[in-house]
Image (cartoon, rainbow, N blue to C red; front, side, top):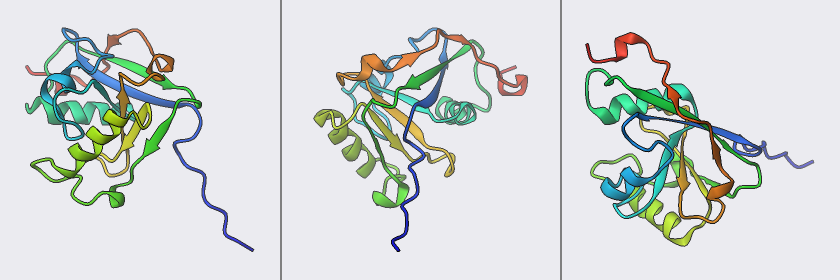
Length: 163
């Protein structure tokens, strides 16, 4: 009798969350295009999202590099249909992915984006080893099938805001 392979947690319809300042387009990879990220060098339209709302909050705290989040944060919930292509990368599959300065993670992400290997890339998070981040290739032909809610004010504990 052969052992049954466990079902991937990334099958079916997926949800993701993004939190951003209200002054910036929220369902857009313009920030990654301009500045790059752990997972890409500048010049690539990648929408960076989190698999949970709480991880989206943590990622914002880290990226704002402040002791508290500035006010006027908005969020969207993103729905990724089952038929949209995706690749999931585990932390043990890419040596050096969490290193700084970035290297292996940017090379991997740039290659994924440039080849349009899938519309979605699920990657490990440095701030939470239990929840992944979800990258969306805005230039992939399947991106239009990914839907987002209208932006709404982020629900955040007031202790996270700059006083």
